[in-house]
Amino acid sequence: MNTPRPSTIRLVIVGASGMVGGYVLRYALENPVIGSVTAIVRRSLRVSHPKLKEVLHRDFADCSALAEVLSGRDAAVFCLGAYTGTVSDADLRTITVDYPVEFARVLRGSSPGAAFSFLSGSGADPTGRSRMAFARYKGEAENALLASGFPHVYIFRPAYIYPVEPRKEPNFSYRLLRWIYPVFRTLFPNQVIRADDLARVMVDVVVLGDAEGPIFENRDIRTMVRSLHGPRTDQEKGRA
Image 1 (cartoon, rainbow, N blue to C red):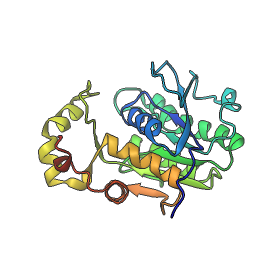
Image 2 (image 1 turned 90 degrees about the horizontal axis):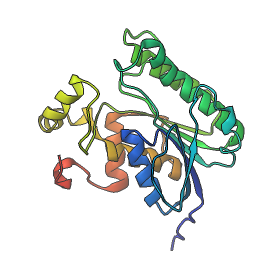
Image 3 (image 1 turned 180 degrees about the horizontal axis):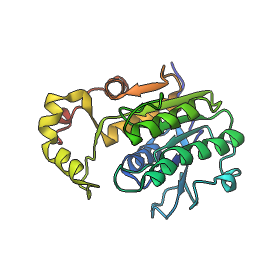
């Protein structure tokens, strides 16, 4: 008989106040294999849980002050990001490239054996030739993280992430996608993923450590959801 794994995994989350990061936090706190969760945040999450340690840090362009906090961590899930069109191009590159690379630098120095799970995006272009800034920047970040020296780096490239719970959409395109989601999901199932499903898989890969990777496209993520948690389509859940 297999002996259950002890609750010793020490997980770090960056971006826990965001849509996907919020579900990452919820799932991590519920996961019996995870013994502690450190959330690096700019403002308080106002969440109380015996597993949770909240660390306020405002300047992700310089994470040197987090060296001690990040010592002895087993895994990290990085979900911090920005929507195209909501910030300037310079800020988009800073948030998309500089922030995760700087965080990874400090984490690697403090916990060299940690596994790293990164929220990228569909269309990310590691060649840097895409005309889309978002694609180029995500590709640049991916390249840097894969070369950072961690034993395991997992890159997730979701397409449209369905918010699940009502929220204020960042722009018209997202409002439209949410409105047509039931039809879009039926016609293009491999171009959508639920935010909660994506979060669960991002945590699972760094906890289990046996995913092939390192890059998972939207189709791969959906397959992993079914493999790890059984059928999880919206119809089967009874939610849209």
